[in-house]
Image (cartoon, rainbow, N blue to C red; front, side, top):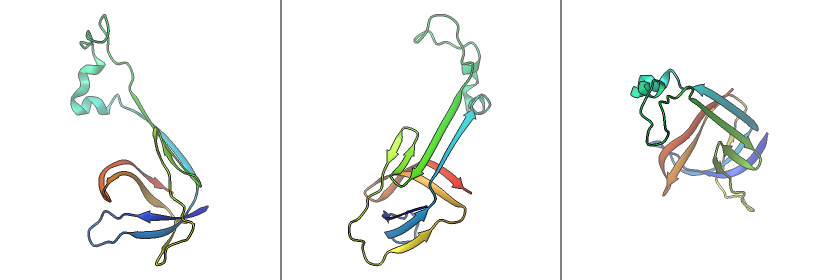
Amino acid sequence: MYRKIIPIYVCSAGTESGYVELSMPMFEISESYDLQQSLPQLGLKHLFENCNMSEMLNGPYKIDKAIHKAMIQVDEYGTVASAVTTSTIAFMRGPSNVKIFLADHPFLYFIVSMKDHALTEILFAGKFC
């Protein structure tokens, strides 16, 4: 379990941004997904048959296997998510009016891209149990 005071920018209507003293467990989660069933459902069935890849390769080729892997590691130094790395800022003097969040129960987490304190996209989402 580690603790940090971090700025939280909330993306929901009717909520406010502020500082949170966050205490949560360190964890690492990795997952692997076979895409051979989902890609054809998205209209990419031709990739797994003899398809035209002549601009990249000589000869008749098809994709034999497609796997997606993701990893998220959270520790006292920050967060690493596959090739995406973020870190938190530690303040020398804590701000007043800090809210406390103790993650000693299952929780959802999101790693997001933000611009001007506004959510632009969700990069990773998961559940800690």
